[in-house]
Length: 266
Image (cartoon, rainbow, N blue to C red):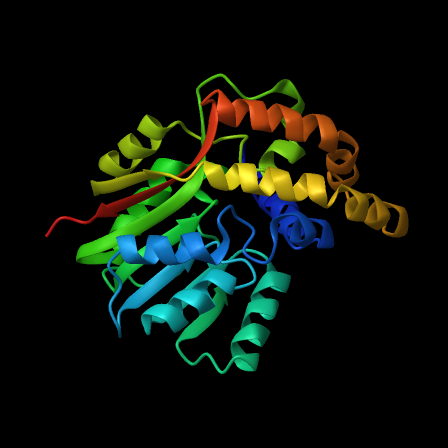
């Protein structure tokens, strides 16, 4: 994929994640487990008051604001979508969150200073990156010696992506380029980080699927009133069969959601 195609894909994903449909299905955090899992990741990173933390692909800023509030630290969110950055900044102003700020930038080409951060985290985003090894090397560069990287993401057994998810829909669900558990662990190690914790949170996907089933009527009502953009109407039309397929994949161990924590040596 050339740079033009990569930019187009990122813009498409940014638009999809800012849609009303994505918010209805996933909530404001746009990842399994919500803020409870975000706080769990924060504890795994051992964030202390006053620490400097970066949130890569920060979306509307829900996680960054929560981490800043719960751990009394300074958080810089980096997000590709211009609308999302504006929403995050507005949310920070409304909540008087002086410890969080947001910048527009590409989380694969991080516009932050090297060696500055005590912790970096990314939720349900690394799976979407086109050059994961380069991204992790940049993350390691951002961290001070002893700093920690927290990652939560979709895990997918090799070769198990259903053909119907090989496209926009698979990108929206963070599945198209997801790795298996060993793949993420090797990614962290090869990027210069020491793995210190891996944790299975796949039950959170089941909770989302249960919630989607419960919201099916609301989703259909939304479809009749709105004009879904590319990918959104497809998702709604396929929702019942898709929910059943994804549930079976989780039960069979082909699909999951995991937390990883790693530390920069030194």
